[in-house]
Image (cartoon, rainbow, N blue to C red; front, top):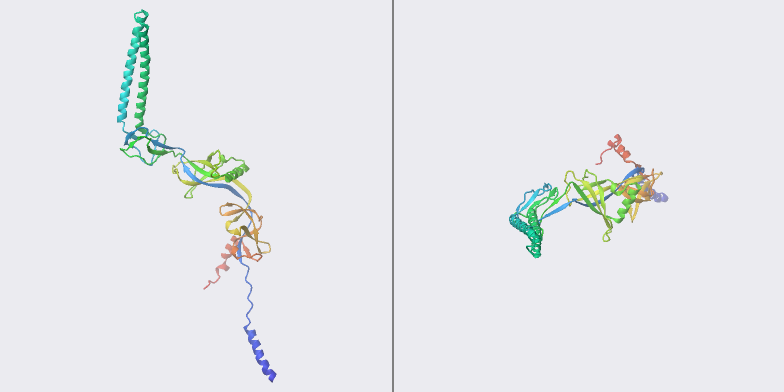
Length: 387
């Protein structure tokens, strides 16, 4: 009886302990990840350069004589035609100088006529020994002086005529004229050729940029593989608002030498500007089409993992387990990276759910199409909502 009394509490304790034992929890299923199968593709090769637009011809119109501005018969910011009158300066003083020079020319011509008449009159007398040789020589010398005076007077008249013509300022080219730098009544040309306005040709536009020596050599090498020269490659102009200019361009100038201070080479590309909307000073980019690269392996940029200076991809093997694979990354093509080393066609790479994977751990690998089909299936639609 005493033994039964001791065993009874022990049995009760064991029964209580067995009733408090927690049930075993089932292991969670492998995480779902989105994968893509690696295939080869053809990737367009291109290079993008940043630069600035400029006009092929920017002409500064300056005053060439000293005068007051009388009229400005043009509209600022509008196109002007070649030889169109854009400034009128006060011609009064130059008209007076022209008249004075014209009068001096008339005097010189009259004097020359008199000297020639004297020679004609004295030659018969000299033949008759009626006058000495010196008188005839003096008369002939006067003719030479008179002819020189006429030439000087003609040059003086031409100079005053030229100054007078400078009072009417014509547009030297057809193009867009900027804001006028002077107003009516201003004195221009006093001691220096005053800037009146600037005109820019707009039928074509130039794109200037500086490219590094390395980038230039790489572009030459890539174009050489395609058997084309750099100046024959099509160029696309991309404006600051990310819109592509419809007209294709081409390289028209590569500087003869690299700038030793910056290590860059200056390039110039030319584009047609039919709408004349491209203006000098705009910032833009050009994309150089270098052909296509065949048999490339591409993965989305979001699938590439950088860790401690190294680059990896998560690859799902035939056993359904994820493994981290070191790779060598090449150029970027849009939102994808070109993989140079580390993977091969047919392998499956994780593109979504990388954060849920562990080295050597199993995963449920599905493509984007399979995940979309699963989510749109009737079974998925009938899942009860969580409260």
